[in-house]
Amino acid sequence: MVRGTVRLVLPLLLLLLSACARGPADTPRALVFAVAHAPASLHPLLATDAVSERINALIYRPLVRFDAHQAPQPGVVRWQAIDASHYRLWLRPGLAPFSDGRPVRLADVAATLRRARDDPASPHAGALRHIQRIRRDGDHLLLSLSRPDPRLPARLHLGVAPADALARGDLARHPLGSGAFRLLAWQDDGGVLLQRRRDGLRLRFAVVPDPTMRALKLLHGEAHLVQNDLPYEMYPVLARDRAIRLQAVPGTTFSYLGFNLDDPVTGQRAVREAIAHAIDRQAIVDHLFNGHAHPTNTLLAPGHWAAHPGLPDYAYDPARARALLAGLGHGPGHPLRIEYKTSTDPFRLRVAAVLQAQLARVGIDLRIRSHEWGTFFGDIKAGRFQMYSLSWVGIRSPDIFRHVFHSASLPPGGANRGRYRSPEVDRLIDRAERLPRARAAPLYRRVQAIVHHDLVYVPLWHEDNLLLTRGVARARPRPDGGYGFLEQVSLAHE
Picture (spheres, rainbow, N blue to C red):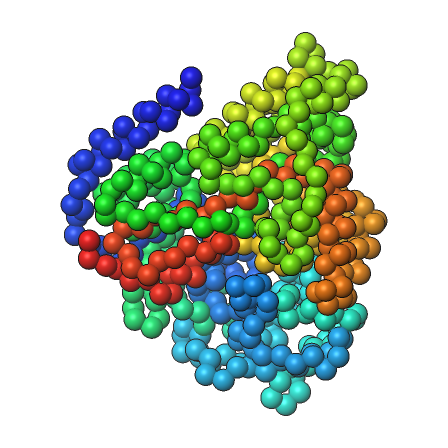
C-alpha cells in the first residue's frame, strides 16, 4: 500500500540521514526559518498570500491589533467613537519610528487608510469602502462614514507605511515599516533576510520547497525553525532528536474544497453534495494528519464569537453520494469527470490522491492538475478551475464573510472566487456590519447556515499549528500561525 510504504520509508530515511547530522555545524549568524514558499509581496496593504502577510506583520506595526480574544486594541492609533458614523484617531505616544528613522505621522495613517480603501488590488477595500472622509482635525484624524459602523476599529488591522513610500509604489520589494524587524536583503532563493531592530538579531526566511529537505536542514542544524508544511509522519520522527522541540496548538487555519459555481458541472448543488458525502474527513485527519486537524463545518474556529456552533455535518455517506450522482445519470460505470487543481506540495498531493480514491468509489473521476504555487494561485484568482482546495489562515474577524461570500467581492474586487451570488447573504452581511457584536452574531450565524446549505465550500478541517525548533529559546506557536513569537525568540546553545 502506498501510504504504508511512505510511512515506513520516510522515517527510516530521516533517521539514517540524521545520524550524520548529530552535532550541527557552527551556529549560523542568522536565525533560519525554513518555509515552503517565498513571500510574493512585502506591501503591507496588498499582500494576499500567507507567508507575505506573516512576514509583513513583523515589518509593519498595525493601526489596530487584536488581543487573544480577537478584540481590537490600540496599535499605532487609539480611537474614540463620537457616534457610530464618526471616529477620532490619535497617534499613540512613544511609537517606534519607521526603520529609516522617520517618526510615524498622522499623514502616514491617513495615507494608509486611503490606499487600503481605494486601491482596486487591496483585499481591505470592501471592508473600508464606507469610510467616506478622512481629514486632519488638530492632533487627530476625523473619520466620517457613509453608514453606521460600531465595529470599525476591528477593520483597521492594517500595517502602516510612510505616505511617500505608499505613493512611490515600491513597497512590495522595499518595505518600510515601524515594526519589530526591518528588511536587510532579498535572498537568491526568493526569501528575505530581516534584522530585529531592538538587538540586531538576524532572521532569514529560507525557501525550501521540498518538505524532506526542510526536515533535513533542521536535523543538520542548517535551519532553526520549521512551522507546518511537513508530512505529518515526520513530526514524531524529528521530535526524537533531543536537540529538536515539537510544539502543537489548535489552529485557526481552515481548509476547504472550493468550486466554480458558474461551471455547468460544479455549479450543480447535487454534485457538490455528492462530493461532500463521498469524503471521509475523519479518516483523512486520522491517517494523513496523524490527528493534528479537526473536522469542521465553518471557517471560523470553535470559540470565535461569531462562529455557528451547530451546523449539521455532511456525514460520510457513499450510498447517499451515489444516489445523488445516479439522479444526474452518473455512477461508477459512467463516471462524472471533474478537474481538481492543487499545488505541487507533496503533502497536498497526497491529500488529493486520497480524495481522488474516495470520489472514484461513488462515480466521480477526479482529474488532478498540480502546479507550482504561483501558477496554481493565479489560476484560482482568475477563475480557471472547476474544483480546488485551499486554506484560509489567520482569520480574526467575520469581515471574512464579505470578502469571500458577498456578491460585491467577485474578483478582482474580492475573494469570492467561486462566483457565489445570494441576495439574502448580501443583505445579512450588510446588516451585520452595522451592528455591535452581540446583535451581529446571530446574523453572521445565519450567513454561515446559508452558505453551508448552499455548499459554496465543502468544509474540511481546522489544522493544528506545529512548530519545530532547534537551538531556539522562547518560541511559542500561535493559533493563527503568525510569526509574532519571533519578536521574543533568541538563539540558544544546544
